[in-house]
Structures are given as structure tokens and as C-alpha cells.
Length: 172
Image (cartoon, rainbow, N blue to C red; front, side, top):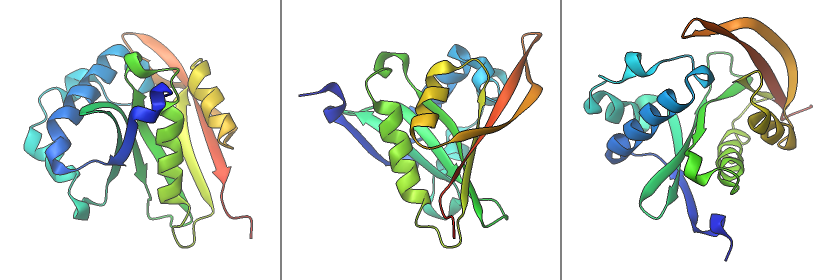
């Protein structure tokens, strides 16, 4: 059996708030330049706030990768008022589960949720320049770079460029 056969992807529920918060804070500490938020900004967020964000009527869509009962990866999907677009955000896989196909499973699940959306034509995402593994994954999933935002993030006094990527989902 391949390692990723044990991974289960599902929508996160309010009851997943403690596990989500723990993984999110770990992500912000481990990869601070990969996120527009910081550990300091999120470490005191009450669990009730996070649970409310995971409610079905919250307008937020977060999916988790579970290895047994352990949350090992997350991805968020959003759709702004520009109804022809959706976006991927906040993707993270715990270091213990990288290079095992978990990121691809999460992204495939997110895209499976996004693509049926009525009127959708494009999915966008952003990633920190220099994140070769994420760039390669997104390219294998049909995303292409359409721009670079210089000095998009400032983390510990160091600036990081952000790549902007898009995937056309409806060419009609």
C-alpha cells in the first residue's frame, strides 16, 4: 500500500478547529514567508472564531488531509464577488507528509470542488517565489505564472516576491 492511500481528504468542520489551529500555527512558524499572515497575528485567535469560520454558512471552504485522525494538510478555496474567478489559498502540508502526494490530493480535491461552480472561468493562486516544490505541483495541475509581485511580503526584515498563477477552467 502506498503511503498516500491512507490519506483522506474532507471538508473541515467546526469540530476540526483545534487541529486546524495547531496546524496553521505550525505552518506560520515553519514557513512564515509562505503566508500573508503571521504567527503573532493568529496565535491568540479564539477557537470559537475558527470554528465559526468552518461553519457551512460561513462562506469559507477549507479542506483537510487526514492521516488517520491527524490533520496533516489544508487548503482553502474562495470565490470573491468576481464570480468568474475562484482562488486557492492557505495551502500547507506538514513536513512529515511532504513528497507523499498529499499536496496533490488536496489540490485535486479543491479543484473538484471549484470546477463545477456556475460561471467559473479561472482559478488563481499565489506563492512565494523560490518555492520550487509548490511551483512544480501547481504547474502539473495546469496553473501558469501570469505575474510577479516584487517585495510582496516582508518577513523578519526580508522581502519576498510573490508569483501569481492562474488556470483557465472554461475556455468557452
